[in-house]
Image (tube, rainbow, N blue to C red; front, side):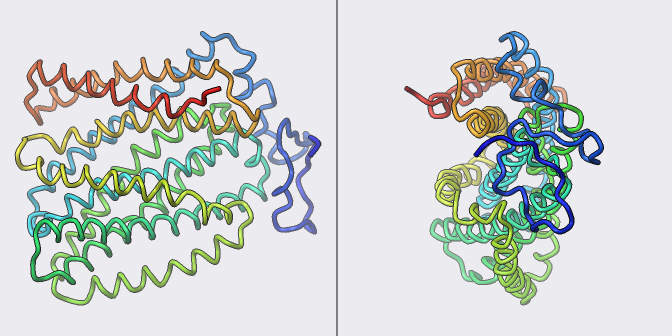
Length: 401
């Protein structure tokens, strides 16, 4: 398909007129109300091909550092919340919630960071520069993440309950399973609405400010996602535990399950996201299985080691945030250029080196808050483990040959 100049469609155009139009080098008339959003080929992600390596690294540091710091701060607050709620009645009564928390947060994080990466790539391709297509793209993605959030939350709740039941069988199985699944689905649905709107607006604003959303959207989605989801989950569980042996959780569960087909139909009607309904589920399921092991470990160690819950979100979160920035940039490069230059390694090593001072800053934040005692041996091994975790995914992210 040849590149062409695209204009804002008229009122008599099709509902989604730009679905099949390649938007590389897209331009708008000067009089178009969205022309301010087009930074041109000399700006944004595509300009990095013509920039010096030091300029690319410096720009990445300037843009990514604040968002990564926000992500660490969000992880710290999420850890503080997890540290506090471990002694609450609901979590003492239903210990399987400690399995549910990391599983749900991880799966929700996957959905939100996928949304951020998808929106960032579309913004860099110019697909969000038109008001009409922007509305269709945003609304479609909001419906899509509702489907994904409700589905993975139901699966996460059932999976966490099953693992807990295998290790510790008990009598009130139905009420506990209904409470866990309903709490997971309700908190996932609410947080998806909040975070979805925030991410969509963040990417659009970044585009207007000529900031590459690939560098900032994923970490902010992660930092907000953990905190918002955990806070909502805590509130929902606290309310439902007071109606533990009633049918309230069951009624909520039935309503949420019945809403899934509605969101599926709405998503299937949107050509921007209908293909994603059948894509990406296998990695999410594999991720669920891997994360379940972390949930079992968390339940086993949260009582044995003081302050363990505080460090859990950050150890996993920092490496995940850096990996998502790198993956989002690679996705944009592949969509726009069709290939990844070896110069893309500049971004990886910049992010890798950036993780070291951020990890140290987190340790000082925890030490200064007095929430947990840390010996120098612990600080040393924590820094080593964090660095290794950040470095390990690199071979799988970078193409060979």
